[in-house]
Structures are given as structure tokens and as C-alpha cells.
Image 1 (cartoon, rainbow over the protein chains, first blue to last red):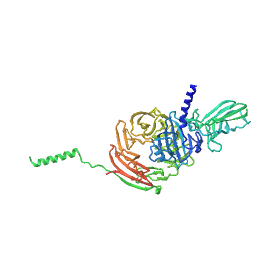
Image 2: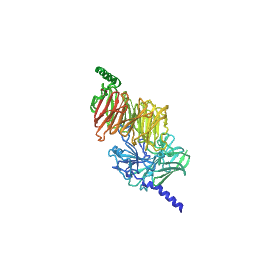
Image 3: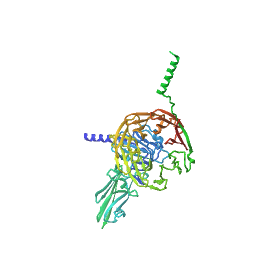
Length: 281
Length: 352
């Protein structure tokens, strides 16, 4: 009994700071989510349509503020930048606020404070860094949960042969034996009528019941001067030109094949799709 | 005693006094406007009055004014456009960047992410907030690239090396050929940010401002290619949370660092000199050949600015109030170029 109480106490203590975090903007304003790709640009956090006011993710100290200025000691294009340091070791990064806001935000920000957005820009970007471990964290992992009961949806599954031939995977198809790269297009709708579409938390690939590959879109790290997922794969090697996610490579031998894609979102909703087909020599 | 003897003594006293303490009039520095032009009315042509080419780069205007002619001023308000004396580097609406040699009109299109950035005669595609930087050559190739998880917070480039600092306190050194080093982390706590970097043109002398609750200036010398050793460390008075103006001296082993209400010059031997100014710093120009430091600051009203000139010893020489806030303030030999609104004014600085 005592062990259960201690475990419960630890669980409550750990969950308290999570509960304390808040969305910087209404989640309905999300335009791009963590790891989404567009025009070779990979999103490192969330991109929101610009609201009138922004809430800080948590109370914290301003540790860096930057605006475009002809005399700025830091030259370069891009947008303004505001970085807050929080007690828990996280840093929240806000890009695209107005110059005036970035200049005038007080050095200590409380959670109930509202920050002016930038009426001249259509969107702003929000990232969370784990400053201690030097990594970018998917904000959906630590922001308050959304009322999401819909599992992720597999839109397409493709096998790319070594000779460059692309096979859309359908039930009862026939495919030559050989090595293939597996690409998927998967989305996670939050609500049926809500236009908000995210990427799922995890996607796994099984062949004949054994795990072939797994992608977790939880954190981004730097490896060999490139952004990588936690498993070490470089992000530049993950997406094809159409934005489909590379799941892994498999070898299909002649006979029956049973390929399963299992998906899970950040709120525990799961879905899997199984494809049975034939592999011939 | 004879009266004439006393007169002789008095005369002798003044002669000796003159040789011991010669009378010298204070030199006055005057600004003589040599050229006043409206940027909207400038067309191609030579500006013979200029001693040297002037690179103009403001939010609205970019270009080169040159005594030889063929100079261009273009309105770049539609997008990010950077200029060097030989190239223009423009970010287009199609998320591409075009590097153009303005002399032979050859150009290269880059589709990689990042915005054009020119440091000296080196070209970069960089999105500092997104932790992306790539150096490209004038012939369209990539020399090196870096993509991380910590935004770039300070950068400086010289003849061979480009050095930048990041939000996690790391200082990265890249050579033109792509060789990479990380400077020995001045603070291993992981709780510091690099706020300023300045590298001398010969790569030899490096200054870094880093820290967080306490901020420090670190001085380094390049012992062997890309290997920097620390030669000085100073605790700074101010605690800025924005990029800090740092500039290494070209002539002496010293560094100018922006502080609250003053520029402070730190020498490697530990000596410091203060150059006070009023208002908030915009920029500073150490004119070492004429032994003057010019400081441009905005006054609290934010509708006017102030140019303060100090001697290298830190004495105030003069200060002039300017209506408005210039968007350009550069020194070229003995000419100072200032852009306020649509007007470009070239001053000749002389001693009187």
C-alpha cells in the first residue's frame, strides 16, 4: 500500500509542471507541426497563425532578444527572436513577434502575462528547447493535451524499389521480390470537423509480425551538423520530394507478405493497417 | 638692486615657462558636408568627391557609391537584399536566393533554406533563428554548412575563418575549406549564451562576450590555424539579453565592448578605458588612424540621435545632435557617410 502511495505521489509531482504549461496560442491556430516539411524547410516546433496576443508557455526569464536592425551586432535575415528560460530547464523560443514586443517584454515573464503579437506578419513560430540536453522537443509532448479521440490515419504506403520504381501498396497486389524503401503519408486529425491536422507521435512498420522500423517524432538533436531524430537518422534523409516519411528499408522474399503499419498519436489513440500481398520472383 | 635686473628676471621666467609649458591651442575637429544627395534621385554615375567606394545598406536602400562610376543605388524594400562591393545577394519571392556578380552579371540561384548574408567578401545563406548557416562561394558552390538545434546568437567572419556562437554557449569555427572546430567551451555549465563575437581581419585576435547572470569578455589569440588560446578574461558590468557590440582593434591588442552608457576598451594587458555617451547605443566607429572613436546613440526621446566623438584616451572631443535616427553611419578614410531619411550626407572630418 505504502509503495503505491509513494508511486502515486511521484506521479503527481512529475505531472504538476506539465499541467502548469500553457499553449502560447489557441491550438486551432496551428498551421504546421513539429517535423513537418515544406519547401525543404523542416519545422522545429509549431507554427501558428498570428493572434493578437500570445501567452508565454511558462513563467521565465528573457535570456535572448533579437530584432532586425541596420546597426545590430548580429547581422542576417530572418525574423525577430525572443527566448525565455524556464526553471525546469526548458527554453521557449518565439520567432516572428513585433520588434516593439521583443524590445519591451520585461526581463521576467509571468504565466498570466500576455505578449503582443505582430499584426504585420501572418504567422509566428514557437519551439521548445531542452537546454540541458541541447535538443528540440515536440511541444505536443509537454503542452496540455488536446481533446483528441481520433487515431492517426494512413493516407498512403509506397514501396520504392532499388531501380526507382514506385509501388503503391494495396491489398492482394503482386510485387517482385527484392529490397524496398518504405514511405508513408500519415496524418493525425484532432477532431472530425476541426481542420487541425498534425503528424502522429510514432509510426511502426511490421512485416510478417516482426518489427522492421519505427519513427518517433518526439525530439530533434544535432548530429554531424545536421538535424536528426533521436534514433540518429538525419531529417534530410527522412522525407521524399513529396513530403512522405521514409520509414525504413525492407527485403521482400517470394511468397506471401503481410505488412502492417501501426500509428499512435500523442494522446494514446492508436490505429494500424495491414496489407496482405504476394511477392514473386 | 637695479630695476632693469628685475625686468630681466621676469623676462627670463616667462621664456623658461614657455619652453617648459608651451602654449598649444586645442585642436578642433570639424565636420564639413561634402555631398548631400537624395537617394530617390540617384542614378548611375561617378561620385568623384568620394575618397573610396561607399557601401550603402539600409532597410530601404542598398548599393555602392563609387568614385570610379557605374555606381548603383537600388530600392530593396521588396525583399532581403544584401550588397558587397562586387556582388548582390537577393532573397526572391520563390524562396530562392540569387547571388549576382554586378561586374560581369553572372548569377547563381540557391534553393537551400536561409536568407542571404554577406560578411566582408564572404557569402552565406543563414536563418540564424532556425540554426541554419551555409557558406557559398561566388561560383555557386557550397563551402560548408551547419544545421543545429541552438539559434545563432553572434557571428564574425574574417579572411579565412567564420566564427559563430549559439544559444547553448558553444562557439563554432569554420574555415573556408570546411574544416570545423569547436572552441574550448569557456563555460561548461551549459548555462551561458554567446552574446557577441569579433574576429580580427587576419583571424589572429578573437573576442567573445558570453555568460548569462554574469557576463564575461574573453580574448583569444590564434596559436596555430583554428587553434585559439585564451589571453584575457574580464567580468563585464552590464547584463544584456541581446546581441552586444564587440569590435577588436585593428592596431592595438584591445577590444571595444558596449556597456551600459559607455563603450569600454579592454586591452590584453588589463588596462581599460571608458568612452561615455548619452542614450542607447546604435553603433560605434573606432577611427584609429585619426585616434577618434565615434559613437552614434539614440536619445531617450527616440526622435533624435547623438554623435559623440572621443579621443582614444577617452576624452570627449565633441557631440552633435542629429534630427532623426540615421540608418547608416560608416567611416571611409576621412569621410563619414550618414543616411537619414532619404538623404545621404558625406562629411569630411578635418582638424582645425
